[in-house]
Length: 94
Image 1 (tube, helix red, strand yellow):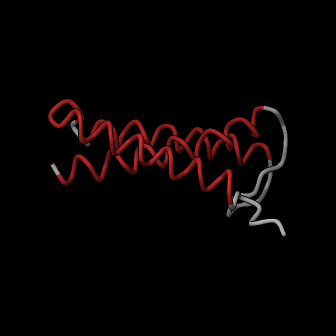
Image 2 (cartoon, rainbow, N blue to C red):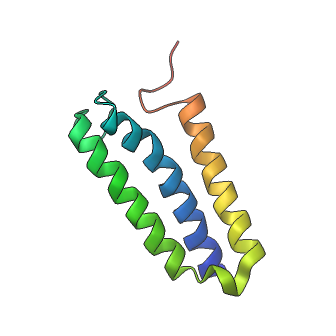
Image 3 (cartoon, rainbow, N blue to C red):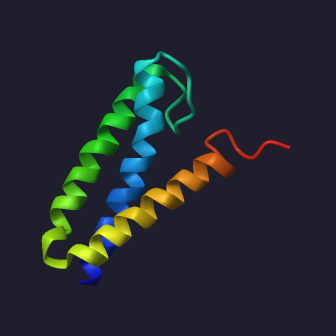
């Protein structure tokens, strides 16, 4: 069960983090990544994180531990959302 909860949490974090990168990539807007703020890099980065989330969710065997896994996904999404809303990818503004 611990593996399921951990992988589900990581899937939630990765999936939530993929959204701003993918959206900025398809709208041709810069957004920071470790590889540069290029829209193409963001598109590929967001897509990669979506794929990673899928693999993590598959490896988590969510069906075997449904409630803890779904709770872990929800917590991961919430924490990544709070990160982007509060600190953000550009760092905290004064």
